[in-house]
Length: 151
Image 1 (cartoon, rainbow, N blue to C red):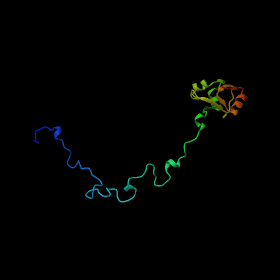
Image 2: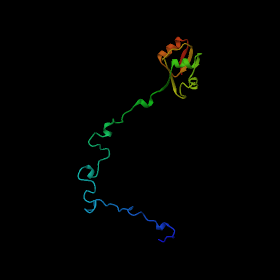
Image 3: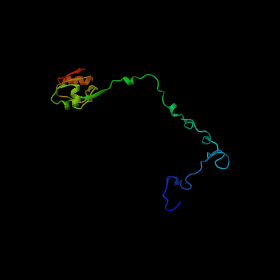
Image 4: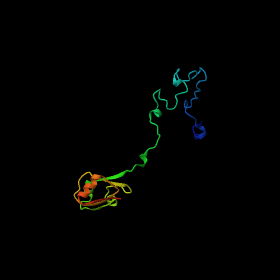
């Protein structure tokens, strides 16, 4: 190519040694013949191992329990829980306690069932309306002069 001739697309060539011919394995003794780079004998020299084979160890799909049968776990009832000591903090003046009021004060999430548990003490009369109560919570609310009614 002349010194002042501009470089063009059709002048481009790969660098020397960049393009090596494809190795044709297993085609005779001249290159990668006979064992074709796989050594001698053993699993690696043959077709290979089955999917999920773990060398003779009991495979994962056999170690795990079978997923069969029916479970009621999908249908269980879960509650947002509120303890009495928390109600005493949120409503120090007493009064009516509803699920909406608890949601507004950030004690529970909206559109969830609420259960009142009896941990802690309350000294103010609360009229609590919730979806469920523990027995100790009902007793303590009644002892403080309030009422517990289920929705």
